[in-house]
Amino acid sequence: MQAAATPARRPAFHLDRFDLSAFVAATLAEDLGDHGDITAAAVIPAGARFSGVMDSRDPITVAGLPLAEAFFRALDPAADIAILVGEGAQVAAGTDLMRVGGNARALLTAERSALNTVQHLSGIATMTRTYVDAIAGTGCILLDTRKTIPGLRVLEKYATRMGGATNHRMRLDDAAMIKDNHVAVAGSVGEATRRAVAAGIVRVIVEVDRIDQVAEAIAAGATHLLLDNMNPATLRQAVALVAGRVPTEASGGVRLDTIRAIAETGVTYVSVGRLTQSAPAADIGLDFALA
Figure 1 (cartoon, rainbow, N blue to C red):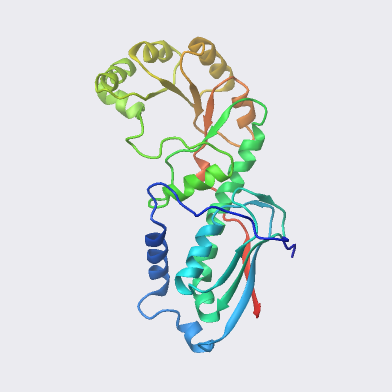
Figure 2: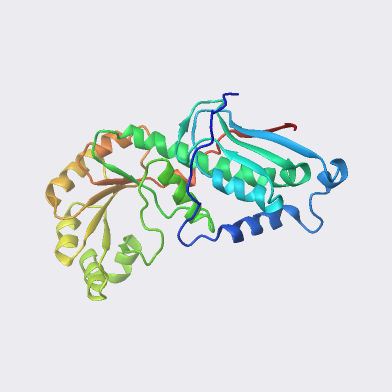
């Protein structure tokens, strides 16, 4: 394993609208069940001490180490923990991420919750970084979406930021987003947009899937156009028609092998749902040794 020389300096971990203590408690309660870690209790002496190293098995972009620390400290407040790399760092396979030492039962009990969280968030950050790198130099900004696992949105969107993306709406009250079903009920793109503007909503994002809807949406007061499932040629036409009056966002079916051509059309943003929907967990392990 490739060890870092000194722990990375880091601020206290805080995310808006996220209760870290409640998340840790609920996750551990889910894992502990009614009788706790019966394996550790049966096999490990109560006073045994262990130390170990969490490391990456593949090249990854790191996210979630402060949460792993919180899991270990929840069961052993006196644990000796050193985070060795910063959040958002791109590291090689074999890089040591964290050193932990303390009560063996506690560390073994917290291990899976800590690893699951870091693997999931680092997987999202790693996939996100590949998409960010794919559009480097185009001036286009990568956005995530609300296609997140229920209850994990704040964490998953944190992970996309660690991978270099920008968060789209966090919640339904961040902005109006008028999509095809809203249009179907309202009667037209223009009517749906006018209703949102009349309601006093400042940010009105309007999805259009045809060129003839662009002028209608802007005239009605759209502040952002989501260009849905348009090919690069149509995107270029839409961007030219918008002429910089509002930001434009390409969305729908974007893949790693298509994102650069989409970004090069001149759109302001490109949003990718698979960042949080389909990212595989990062391969990260925690190997213990007697202290």
